[in-house]
Image (tube, rainbow, N blue to C red):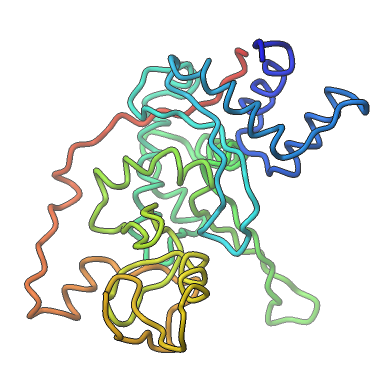
Length: 288
């Protein structure tokens, strides 16, 4: 298909929204093309493939993923940069102070066992930024899906009183756009799933081999077992998985594994502070 206004419209929508579910993508595309056009998920996938051919030279792409770090397994489209240190328009939008603050946020989140930080901690990580500037950035990055803002209400000690808790974790865009950054700079705190080989942010550990898996990947592995033996996904043996898999909890870090297996001769990881740091850049484009 010749690159046309439909491609431009959808690319502009993705660049502005950052993240769209497949259901939302079908809806917005159908609204643009009109009721006489049949729009299916396959229509969106084909359109994305054609758009990506044009985006390749800009170091950007639209990726279709299933969010394995949450209970939702719906296909989701993400507008991401393929090169984390590529000079982009975002480096004109965000100052060096902003980008340094973002780097501190994502590193703190990854190094925290729960993979989330509270609002006060997020604000305290700022340097050379006012409290108001940090608040604005946190909201903006949440809307861009680099961060995910989690707001919960809890009943207070007094009758009819409630307290609001705000936390931040990595957004879907942040997970997929900075996977290489996490692997290169924070590999003491992240592991790749033994099934799909993608980074595990939230998941579980096999109690037999200690390796990390996404919960959906573990479920698929269990469904593919031909007998009642629940074998380890990483071992070619009849070793069984214990029942106390830590569903939806953060994975164990190498440091924790070293404490638990001090005689196993685990390789000591290079401290994060000594690792090569990539230049953080965020994609926030409306130029299409």
